Length: 137
Image (tube, rainbow, N blue to C red; front, side, top):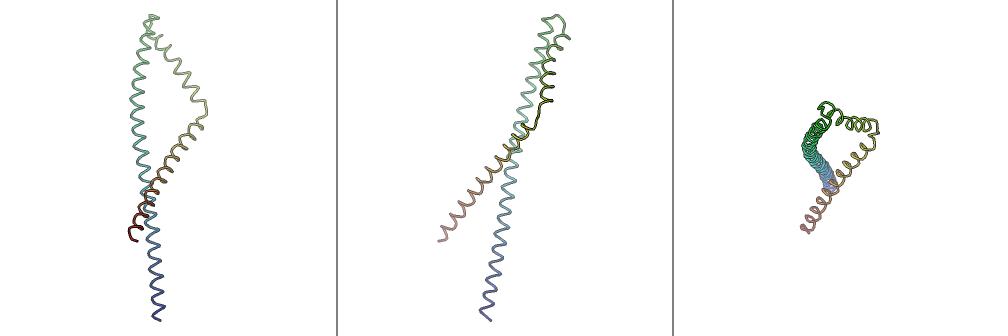
């Protein structure tokens, strides 16, 4: 009877340790996911700010071109019209073209970055576990 109680206690202890291990692994995955998502958000914000500044510069250059063309033809309105024609053409072409390729490429890049981050965090975790197990021996 005493032997059976010890076996039962060892099994319960083992179950608790396995459950705790699984919970810790789930927490680790959640932390790794949140780290990668926050990194992607930070990088996206930085790119957005850069794109905003670049678009502002392009806007002012386009306005300068419009005024310059208006001075060349002695009609400011006609200069803006001439400068606007390429924008309408490129906008129409971009709107009509399939954006699925661009979407797929962006999605693949995000997934690739996320998976690389997971692999890196798991390599670090495995290295830490190996160091701890070798330190215990």
